[in-house]
Image (cartoon, rainbow, N blue to C red):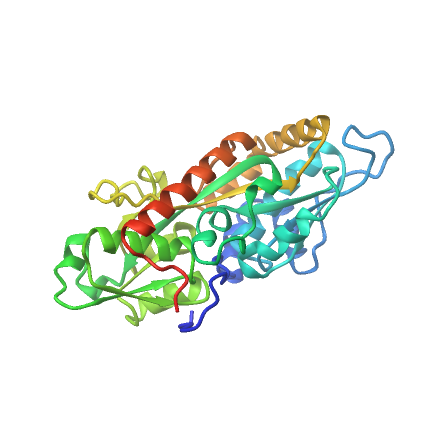
Length: 351
């Protein structure tokens, strides 16, 4: 991204690198490729049925809101899951993009919808447990105001550098003898938080350079505009595999199977597990039978070969847990991140 020196704290985290993602997406099958072609217009995903008497309330369609632009990670994940959901419930599933404020605008719209199961949202974890640390109290959506249907997947961050930078380990960065510059995918994002925490704990003098998404951050690292950058694994894996980027550490709890030869920051001795998680949210007050039908429908989608292939192609770790576990995990993440941000005096919101 071109540096945003006055970026808003709710700058969107997910890069809309449509060309790259479309290439990945195309490998998952004709049905999912068709879904991508509908991204810009918010078309139906999956055939569904308009026949009366369907198990999921009537034949009315389901709308899944996405708080990011078409073609980005969150959008593609929503469409991959929607395909199988439509197949199982027998109704059309429409994905609608409502970008703005890192998903907060879509979340606000969701909260005002009827709790009948016909309007859902793919909710980014960063909006729940990182954005609140970058804005004033009460400015970020509160997950207590929603029902949570299911978890979806985890997207790992990886700290990368150009091969000729001279950096291969965290120790190399600490021994640089000068301030290190690090690119982030935006202010108040997991990309920023992961690096701020790592450099604070490693006592590395480092300066953040915020960009507007993963692609420009990646470009800045490749071009030597910044020394390092924390980028979602799916966006960086091709360059890593091609030897165009050096992976220093990942910010996962455990080594991702897609990058098993790269240590985690935790292994390197730093308490910096930061991942982008996603889950399906609904307006507060879903009837129990509707919640059960939706959960069963998503579970059926998760079991489809095309969806599993989509996760594999995009270096996503399945996180198909129930809503209670999502809420507990994200609430705990917020508490833990708030504690460490305060401990190390980190200001995510910028000036």
